[in-house]
Image 1 (cartoon, one colour):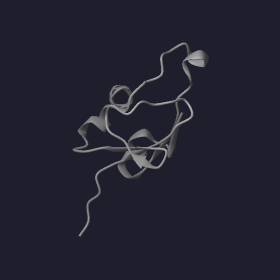
Image 2: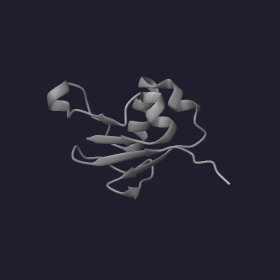
Image 3: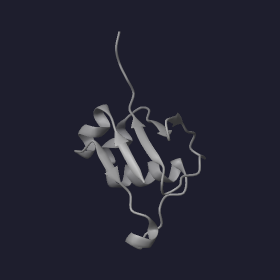
Image 4: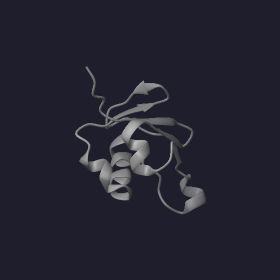
Length: 84
């Protein structure tokens, strides 16, 4: 699973992308939903929890928290955007 990071999320993580290994490689269970992924990332990178909103896109489409993830998905974390 590849996670693309934009804006402040890229700054928080320190990289424009993250790779999440499948459970067979790491011995850990991969998050199965967007909600589980957000919880995992918030635990790993606590500064993400301070964002007032964080949209998630899976394979180029916005996804709700209950969206089921697959190991081949491309995920994007989209932080709040300010502007005028």
